[in-house]
Image 1 (cartoon, rainbow, N blue to C red):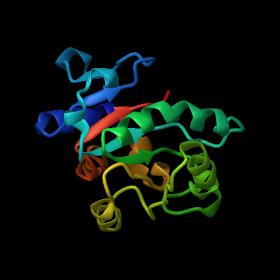
Image 2 (cartoon, rainbow, N blue to C red):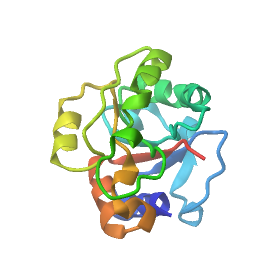
Image 3 (cartoon, rainbow, N blue to C red):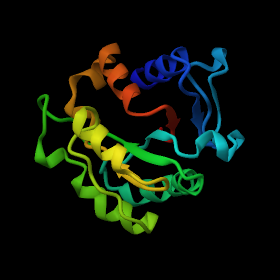
Image 4 (tube, one colour):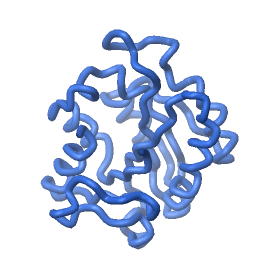
Length: 177
């Protein structure tokens, strides 16, 4: 799994821990002790950090329920003054690269309404443009990254893509599936 690989890369680099919300069962990297419940984290561990949160915002007719489900995690992170980066997939794009019908644009309004705060959409999930947006974020702000499936590395479980995601944030939270 790409996200297990991402977590292992962050932990191996000594820059992060991975967290799962309390209702999720830790899967990968459990033997390393790398995962623990988000409720176990002290606010000082999260304050000012770039936190990549894997969420399920795939628009399959249940997206309003899915957005409501991520609210407690996002609120906990923003209350700790973290920079929250939401990452998800949407559908199964037919090719690599941007496809309008699979853009995360379709959920931005709902995410903002449920979270009660602005949640701009980044033009990609990795790269210089994303880094620039994250650098400009204030603690406690939320940024939705564009569909992770626009990159072939997501479904192919490529280490290079996992490294590029790891470069975006220092902490990973699994809040999906």
